[in-house]
Image (cartoon, rainbow, N blue to C red):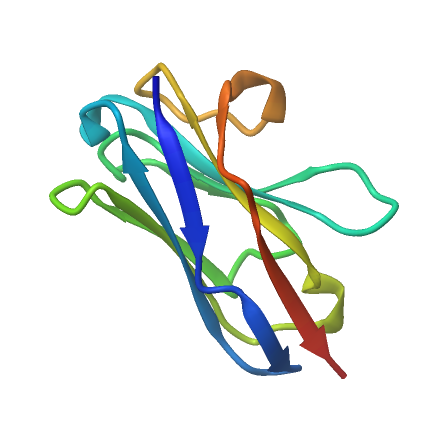
Length: 124
């Protein structure tokens, strides 16, 4: 079992930056792939970024490519999402997720473990 806790959300103006963190516990951090997803009001939860167990492989949604960076520090049991050049359309609840495999996936159905989410609001 894996427990996930997100932090770092908040209110920021368009063009600003935020860094989200996802702290994990319950299992050895370096044995599972992880991802970030987001859900805006009235919309389905969508893929944002994912990382393999080592961080050596990453993937991004087209909408955030070049602006967001996923990373992980296995020694600290923590994953990060650096978000730059934020846009109002990035406003959503951001969730971190983990799966019991080493390789990343972009489908939310491949992730059995989820955090409670952190709100990101970008004002225009």
